[in-house]
Image (cartoon, rainbow, N blue to C red):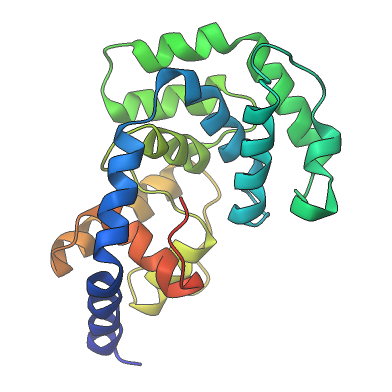
Length: 209
C-alpha cells in the first residue's frame, strides 16, 4: 500500500477503537501507587512474550499479594497457561527490583522531567531499557513517550519513516526513531499515546496495554 492508504487505514482504526483507546489512557492515569510494582513486573514480562500472558502474570502476582509475600515467581512465569519467554531471568529481575523498589520509587517521585525519568529508570530497573521504561511510565499515567517495540517499528517502516534494515542498537537509535514517531503523530494529528494503541490495534485487532 501507498503511504496515504496506510495512513487512511490508521485513521479508520482510530475511529473504530477511539472510545477504547481513551478509556485505556484514562485507566493508566488512575493507576494507584500500590499498583506501580505490578505494572513494572508486567513491563519486564512483555518483551518477546504475548501481552496477554504478561497481563495474566501481573494479575496472578496481585492475587498472591506479591509485594507483601515475595517469592521466586518463576513457576508463574513458566506456566503454559501464560508462558513468558526467558522466565528464569525475568523472575530474577522481578525479585531484584522488589529488593530496591524504594530506589525506583525515588526516581518516579523525583522532579526531573519525563525524559530524564525514563532514562534514569532504564538504568536503575533490572530488565529495563528505554522501551520498557517508556512502557512502564505510560502505564502509570505519563504521556508523550514512544514505546518502540517491534510492532511500532514495523509500522514506521511501512510508511517509510525509517529504513527497512533499521534496528535499535543503542540509545541514540531509540531517540532517532522516537523523534520520527512523534513527527508522524503530528502529521496525522493523533497524539502519540493514542497512535501507539492504534498501531497495536492494527497489528493485533486488540487494545491491551
